[in-house]
Length: 178
Image (cartoon, rainbow, N blue to C red):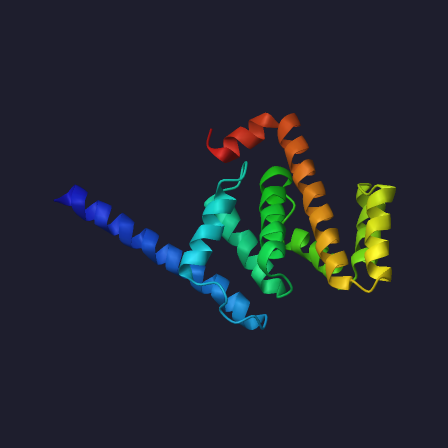
């Protein structure tokens, strides 16, 4: 009976934690003006997808989702790219999810300028990539420029995370529970 009671208490605690995480996430969506666009099932699916990324824990996934929601700038594919990159960077390099989301916000506001500023520090853009963003902007396709810029930076951060994990496998394996 005691074992069953302990199992029931653990399940109740886990359910309460999940509910608290969902509430925190939805609160940030609402406060950022997006409303509660993502319900419980959507939140669980996003958290589970991020939790499957190399080195990312459930808590890291929830933190990245919440920070991305707090920004209030991202939806759909952008939301997933930003949250995924934020979760991976925190897990592999220790760079906070908030700092990563802030970098993406700069890109979302001004794709070309945001990328150039980040490129000054991180050296990741090719001339062709830069030209593509410039062309999109000059053609008046600012949303496409922002989407492309966010994709470029997300790919760069995922590459950084992968390279970090490759040179520091002991840290990565420990954080992954392997």
